Image: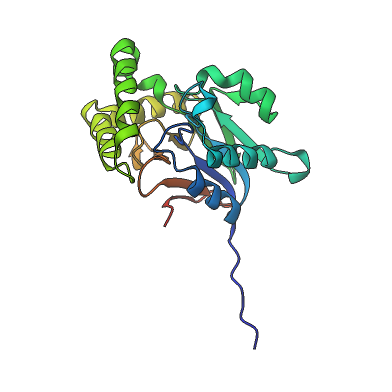
Length: 236
């Protein structure tokens, strides 16, 4: 008797954000595993895929993920790969366009089964970041230093990131900002990243999702099927 092998269901779109390649807390290997075992027609990289411009910080498994993304962009794969830049990888736009052969966008809009979707990273609505650039840069440097001497699982680093995002009320600002700009595109669904906090809200008749991140445990992502059904998942 043959056992029936279950195969992963093909979804229309898979959305991930905030991988922060180059950072010690980046979970590149876990994301690579997800991409390899999943079946999808469109991949949306919703910002902060890299942590900064310093490619010397990238580890071997980080490069493995970049190589796989590049493989997915090949024309013969018949797959659409969309990169929406975030505040960390904004300066890498031209490098990524040349290296991966894809257009990097500020935002992205598409349709599935008559429903309209709109994705933007969300740092554009982080008003603390906008008005306190110097303080934010100093905090980033301190955070990277802490990662170097943190425990194996980076418990302290991950706790500090979650605490800082909540204290700055970033999640609420990003959600409201995303919905406001999404309305102009008459979107039914809005997707943002940036906050590292997975979230699902209904605001003014629009469904808002935050993708979460790939630096925390568990990491999170979003899928949309061919019937425009949206689901938020953790890697488990």
